[in-house]
Image 1 (cartoon, rainbow, N blue to C red):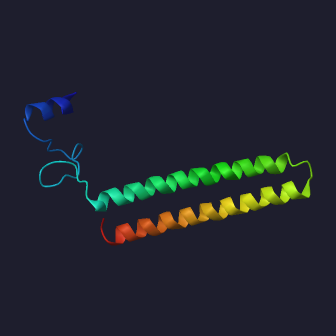
Image 2: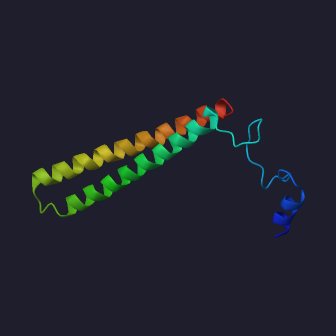
Image 3: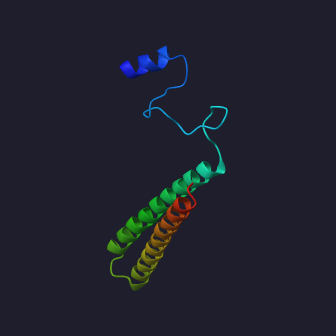
Length: 106
């Protein structure tokens, strides 16, 4: 509560490192493309990774209940391979985005 009381008594923006946000000149949060684009890409990568994991799990279930049918086994293996390749692409894209944004000091 001491931290909260200090920020109220100062009648201005908080001066400590604990509450400092990246702000623009007018004091509003920085909504520049340098901060928005990496956040959007991170959310997209997380969503795509989640979808890939769900497909991998569903393919495993299909493989388990295929009852030895060669067509069902082949279809389940194919979808699992595509999902694993997709997951690897998402991980690689995320790593590339990380290194590019850190390389240009975003």
